[in-house]
Each structure stands twice: as C-alpha cells, then as structure tokens.
Length: 180
Image 1: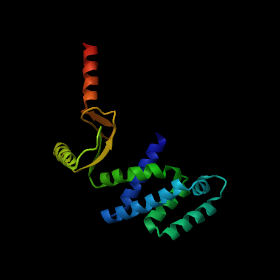
Image 2: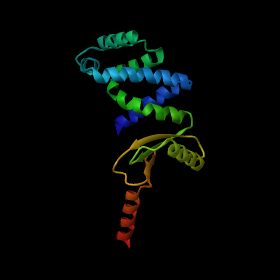
Image 3: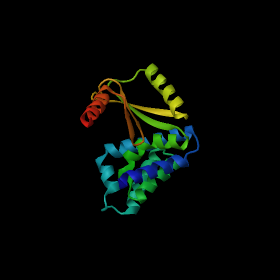
Image 4: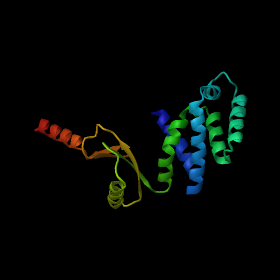
C-alpha cells in the first residue's frame, strides 16, 4: 500500500509539472523509452538500484544514458529525482499511472472497462457518451479484455467496480437468494 501511495505521488507530481498535451506526450514518451531500456537491460537496472554502487556513479550512468538518448530536461530531472530518492524500481508503476494522473489534472475521469472481447469503436463511442452524460464530466476509457467476464462488462471507477456482466448479475442473484 505504501508503494502505491508513492507511485501516485510521483505520477501526480510529474503530471502537475507538465503544462500541455504536447509536453505530456513528449515527456511521457521519454520516460517510457527510458523505462523500456531499464526493464530490458539487467546490467543497467542492477547498476542503478544496487546499494553497492555509490550515488555519484549512479548519477553519472543515468546522466550519460539520458544525454545520449536526447531526453529532455523535465524527463531527465524526474528520472534523476527517482534515482536520488532510490525509487527507480517504482518507474513501471509510475509510467502506467501517468495517463490517469494527467487526466485527473485536467478534470477528466478515468474509467477502466473490462469486457470478454474487445469493444468496437462504435461500442466505445456509445459507452463514452453515456458515461459523460452520467458523470457530467469528460471521461477517458481504458479498455481491457478478460475472457472470464461472461456477457456484458465490468466498469471500474477508482476503487468502485460496477459489474454489468451476466456473471456479476448471477452472483448478485445468488447472494439475494441466499439471504432470503
């Protein structure tokens, strides 16, 4: 739980530092590019997170990589901050949460939609329109598929899940019958 709180703080902090959509796309892409390298190279990951390499050497390695890759100043400062605070291991979760943090900053509600099969463009559009009307604010849908969802879909808004699947309705019916 503590790590999730830290992840949220770092993602929110980076989102707050970005001024517009163009900068969000640019910095987000630079952070993800570094993340891809960080995840794919065991030697790099070990060098940057091990306690056996001193902080100056770690900073020099990171600065060298960021300079060679042409990473901009905001992404570089953010990655250096994570290194200084020994939080680079949180980078995958931070990168995953960054779009949601950006949406939150801009007053857009992020909703996770899980269905058994991928939604068509028309289905997404109708669902989005219905949710905008219901929530009275812009929404961003994050669509996922899960074959375990039988008929219908599940919608997650923060920590609340609305289960509109056949499976969910059957479970609710079973619970009501057990109480009666």
